[in-house]
Each structure stands twice: as structure tokens, then as C-alpha cells.
Image (cartoon, rainbow, N blue to C red; front, top):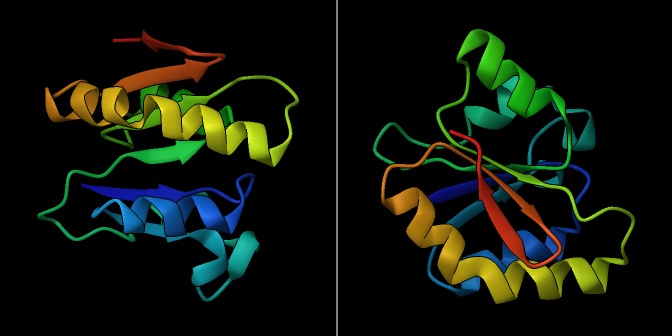
Length: 119
């Protein structure tokens, strides 16, 4: 499974995901850094990967719905929280997130301690 990580998240999130044995790419690791367009973020995975775009950006869910552009999106919407709290939330829910997408689900929202299926 591959996790492209959008610019709104700390780079350490992609490092942590990699330490868990998964693939992750933060926008800071791409040539255009945080100016990388959404379309380029999704291209960071190989064709063999299950790709889950991780974003706070409302554009990803909207493009998925309107254009069917992205296969899987994890939309993180806990409100204004510190990066430390964001990391704790993601880490505490990571097993559920993986299971959710491994089962073939396509769009989930992670808020304060809850994963909501938006299929």
C-alpha cells in the first residue's frame, strides 16, 4: 500500500508510515515540494500499489466524486489540532485505516477518533 501525503501534514507522517513497512511519499520529497499539483501527487505510486491519498484538502474528495480521478482518498478532518495530536490520531487509527482500504473501500474521512465511510 502506498500513501501519498499532501502538504498540510508534517513530513514525519510519511517517515512513520514507512517505518511501519508501507510506502509513503510526502510532497516535500517531490521535485516541486509543497507546490506539487494534486494530479502529480497521485502519480507517485506504481501501478501495482494500492494508493491512498492522505489529505486535509477538500479538493481531493471533490475531484474523486466529480471526476472519479482518485481511486482511494483518506480525508482527515479533525479541525485545528497540533501536529503532535494529528500524529497521535493517525497512529491510533492506522490499523483500521489499512484494513478499511485493504477491503476495497475507496473514500474515508478520519476525524477525532472516528473513521467514516463515504462510499
